[in-house]
Image 1 (cartoon, rainbow, N blue to C red):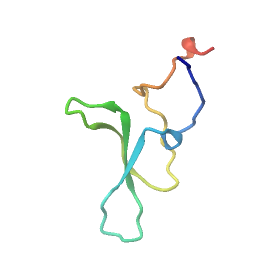
Image 2 (tube, one colour):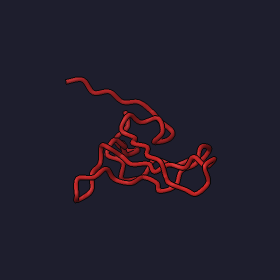
Image 3 (cartoon, rainbow, N blue to C red):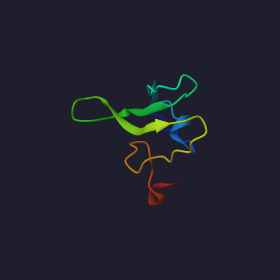
Length: 75
């Protein structure tokens, strides 16, 4: 088995990010829901990362991220 590690700065760079449209009354607004397809809740639904993300928002990677490697585990 091959182990691959890479650095990312935001969930936006992750292959497991699911983005869906956040409905608003403003047709020019492009807000989104962000969910993690790698981590599931008790109903087997993708876990929510953020509930209202706009184009230039900076969303940090959550501490519960299943791909996150602790500082003591980095090589």
